[in-house]
Amino acid sequence: MAELLSLDFMRQALIAAILVGLTAPLVGVFLVQRRMSLIGDGMGHIALAGVAVGVLTGNSPVWTALIAAVAAAVAIELIRARGRTSADVVLAVIFYGGIALGVVLFAKAPGGSAGKLTGYLFGAILTTTRSDLIVFAILATIVVAVTTILRPRLFAVANDEEYSRASGLPVTAYNLILAVLTAVTVVVSMRIIGLLLISALMILPNASAQLISRSFAASVRWAVLIGVACSASGVIVSYYTATPSGGAIVLLAIAVFLALTAYAGIRARVHRSRVIHDDRHDHEHGPDCGHEAIDHDGHIDYLHDGHRHAPHGSHYDEHGSVHPR
Image (cartoon, rainbow, N blue to C red):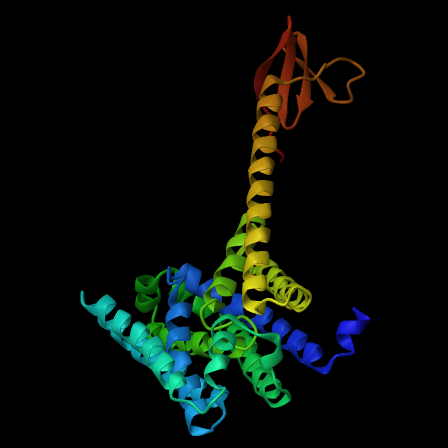
């Protein structure tokens, strides 16, 4: 690990990975609630066209990608809000048109620039510069701040738009904010995880967290922890295996999801077996069992988990519940 931290580009890549792992699940949790899990892919397609414009014109690809992604996010949300049956077709045209335009513009870029296309699509730890890292840190701070402040409102709108609108919340405005946050997260993530894979890091940590959490707040915390761990570990794995960082990160996120799915299944089976075990009442009641003895109609009941149990042959009869006063 000390060897990695001694390399300037690896330090930058790890910091960028932590920023990605932090922001992607925070935005993705609301996309999951809205059943828009794959919207990040579409944003990535548009952002690629913005990157290509920046490369072709000699401007910073981060800023041109951000402008393109935010503009597309606003357009997508406005189209979706209209609710027309043709909205899906329009969105498909925008998404596929974006990636097609990006590929064509990259082909016209100065010599050597076209080779960077794979890095933008699937992530590459060598592509994060110090100036990019500063921009990513600023954007990530904005994402974290906005999602933290507006979390209750964003959750309410994502969970039930009609009820939120009836309650007086500006639903369209909050949906636009979420769309812009998604666009910003895509741009923050493009150097490390790639424009085609960012949606996976928005969704998989949240899907994993829901398997082990009992509340929305706990789910968000677990999702962020999983996202940061997978992002940082994926960058390290990609360095030693000489593979795109995005692929390594997503594979680790999938591995975590599968492991937690297996764990949740085992836990559910254990819980069911305990319930069955408890229903059988595999416990010997008597003077020394430790449960309170209660005189009831000429015989003794034993107070167990709020219920009065009376020995009867080889089993125990239920003689009512005892409610706390």
